[in-house]
Image (cartoon, rainbow, N blue to C red; front, top):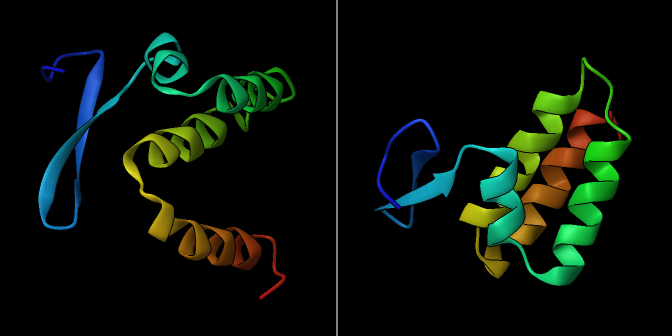
Length: 82
């Protein structure tokens, strides 16, 4: 994926990782089950929360399974549950 208006990059494990920066790009990068959950989250998003939903799924695309515990903790903290 080349960096243009449809992609961005982040650092993961000290390596540059390119991630999609469009709704369609995120959708294509997800498994069938993830895509279903993405569509549900996006469909339920408000104008104010849609950017948060997209950021969450971009991070999901860029992350590995070892990151899931960290994301769960950060989401809980964001909801005031930590």
